[in-house]
Image (cartoon, rainbow, N blue to C red; front, side):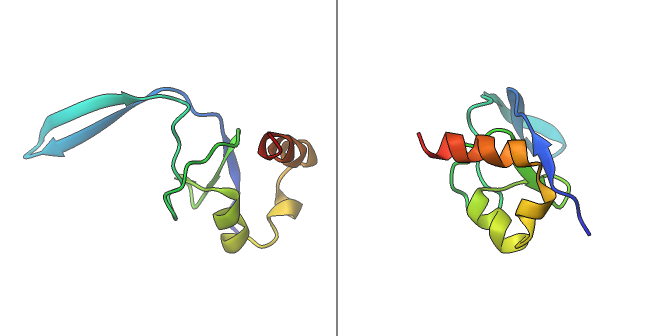
Length: 86
């Protein structure tokens, strides 16, 4: 069974390569995380990662892992619920 990892994003580089050369690069701030399945903004922290490196929203997490509440620590679930109630 694939694990659900928890990620605290940091600023990171985004780059586009063409012909073996970096054509464009920019910094993506830690506040910008997009669900790799449905492309919505992921506002919760830590960000759930599935399949190794796919950042996902809670809707996609529930769709891909119906048992996610049994696999994520209770304190993290409580923090996500607190963040979603804002």
